Amino acid sequence: MSYNLWFDVLKYKKVGLSAWRQTSFILIYILAISAEAQQATLKVADSLYVTGNYFKAINQYAKVGSNTSELQIARAYTAIGNYHKAIGQYHHIISKDSTSQIARFELAKVYLKTKKPKVASDMLIELTELDSTNAEYFYYLGKTLQTLKKDFMGNKAFVISATLDSTHLRSLFEIAKYYVAQREKDSVLKYAEKGLRFYADDVALINLKALAYFNNDEHAKARPFFEKLVDLGEHKEFIYSKLAFCYFKTWEFEKSKITYKKVLALNDGNADAYYHLGEVFLKDRQADSAQFYFKEAIAVQKPVLVREYEGLARVARVLNNTKAALEFYQLAYEEDKENALLYFNVCTQADSYYKDPITKLKYYEKFVEKFGNHNPYTVKMANKRISELKEEIHFSGN
Image 1 (cartoon, rainbow, N blue to C red):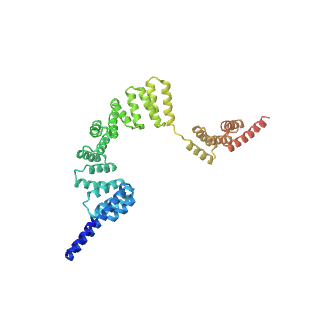
Image 2 (tube, rainbow, N blue to C red):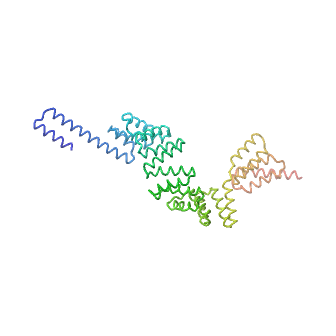
Image 3 (tube, rainbow, N blue to C red):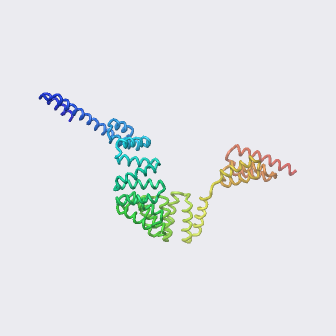
């Protein structure tokens, strides 16, 4: 197109157009060339932006200098996580055009992301006043109010969003989640169903529906929804836990056992799973298995205090309280019976505390018997002390 314009200029020169018309035509040509170059640069910048090459995209957009390119620069800064520059760029755009709802909306979302919900909420309230039909404005207003711990008002904003757009799944989810926390089963089901009519396999809404029944002790009704979550690939600990409990409550003991074991396969430290598995076996009249799982529930909950006991033992040594030091080292050893150094410290404190060489000897002999293949230095020290004590016992007996 630019070449055709140039030839047109030459043609009109030949037919004797006035100088000012020739100049005007040349200016039009130059502007066309400039616009074409800008479009080419914008195309390159857009390609870089879409492929995630944000730094290069910013440099290309800066060459264009249009309102659209300035907005894209702000978006690129947001995409790379440089929120400070993104905020500055958005404010620059708004200072040039205070009516730009797009820039103001995107800036509000950046403020929400950077944990400035009060600023974000103020901006979003203004946007909802400018356009009271925009469901997204009300959805993000709800999110900012949630962050400000104004859950009731946040839920109101989500309800407005869902009223404006009956297919707004994110708003429907937030409303249903709010009512789960309030234990209002009917409201949960109402809003979850609205979303599921639009997208039947939405796992978040199915989960809320299952929880609504579960929290209301309607385990038979909750069970198929937890089963559907598993079928949809949600192999998560809390889902299996609740499904297993539903099986237990509906007298399906074998399914409950299998499902609780899946919980333990995901987390072998889940004390509740061990306990409930014990309950299932007990209900199924299998006392030995029930006893085993109840004991496992106790075992996984027992705190490991070896570090704390060993620290108290060292304090006691500093205070020259040999009896207390011995007791704390013994407690530490009970927590970790494979720790050779801990038991060697038990031996040395017993050596200092007891007067009877036979009692002292027993500690060191037990150490060598259990840890003879461990730290050569401590074993060597123990054997040396055993020889000394045996010699002491021999001479004291004569």
